[in-house]
Length: 409
Ligand SMILES: Nc1ncnc2c1ncn2[C@@H]1O[C@H](COP(=O)(O)OP(=O)(O)O)[C@@H](O)[C@H]1O
Ligand SMILES: [Mg+2]
Image (cartoon, rainbow, N blue to C red):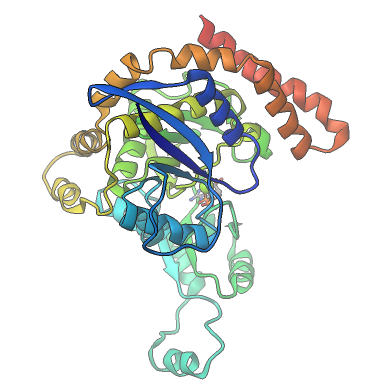
C-alpha cells in the first residue's frame, strides 16, 4: 500500500484544519494509484531549524501561514526545490507577483482593471543616501492633480495589499492628503473607486473548482458572504468564474479568492492576489462545507495523479492571446482553455466523479455530525463576546443547516 502525507501549515485557526482532518478521517480515501492503492495521512507541520538539504516526509502542503511568517515560507521553498513537494500555493509567484504585479499582468491580458497609479512612498528610508538620491532623481509631483485625473472617489491602498490593512476611501483632496501623510513608508496605489455598482462578488477557487458569491464588504466580517443565488446573469456568472480561473492558472495559484465589482455592465476585478484566502467558518458559514470538501478533493487529486508543481509561469502563451485580434469574450475563452489545461480540469472532474463519488455524501453527513457542531461552537466562542455567543451559535447552525437542506435535495 502506498501512503502519501498532506501537511497543514497553520497559524492559530481552529476551524478549517479541524474540519479538514475530520472530513479526511471520515472519507478515509483509498485511491487508485499505479495499479495499486494510495492512502493518505494528514499532519500539522511543526516549525524548527532545518538543514537545507534535509529530506521531508510531506508530499503536499496546504499553506495558510507563510504569507506573514517568514521562516516557514523559506521552508516551503526548500521543500519545493529540494524535495519536490506539491504546494498549495506556490510561494514563488505569490512573493514576486503581489497585488501590484497581479494588476499589471491582468492589465496586460486586457482585463478591465480600474484605473490605478503607484505613488512613491511619503517617507523614504531615513538615510543620507536616500535623501541624496531623492534630491537628484525624484520628480516633484502633483498628487491632487493625479487624483483629479483618476477622479474621486478613490481608494488608497498598499501596493502589496491583503486583509484590508491601510485601505482608505478618499472622497476629496483633504482626505487624499491626510491618507498620504498617514501612509508613511508604505507604498500606495491610488485606484479609481467603483461606487453605485450593481453588485460586489467574491469568488473562492480551489484548483478548477470555483464558487462565486454575492459579497457585501460593508457588513461585519461574519455577514459579508450572502446566501443568495441568481444574483448575476448567466453570462456574468460564466465570466466571473472564467476570470478567477484564468488569474489563478496564470499565476499558478490553486487556492485563492478574487473580488470583482460589476458596474455599468462591466465586471472589474479589484482584488485577486489573495493566495492565502480566508476560509474561516465565521466568514464562510453556509459555504464552509463546500470549501473544505473542495480543498480535500483537489489535494487528493494532486496526490493520486502525481501532479507536479510548476515553479515557472507560462506568460508568453497568455500574452500571445492578449496581442491577437480577438474580442474580449474570445480572449477570455482562449485564456480559459489554457487555464483548463493547467488545472487538468477534465481529468479532475472525472476523478471527482469516480474516485471521490462519496465525498459529497460524506461531507453532507459530516456537516450534521456532533463533531462538526463542536467545532462550530468552539469557534463562535473564540470569536464573539459571551453575551452574543448563544445568538451566533444559532445563527451559524442555521446557515449550515440551510446548506445541508439545499444539498440534501
Ligand atoms: N477600486 C475600488 N472600488 C470600490 N471599492 C474598493 C476598491 N478598492 C478597494 N475597495 C474596497 O476596499 C476593500 C479592501 O480593498 P482590497 O483591494 O480588497 O484590499 P485587501 O487586499 O486588503 O483586501 C474592498 O473589499 C472593497 O470593499
Ligand atoms: Mg480584498
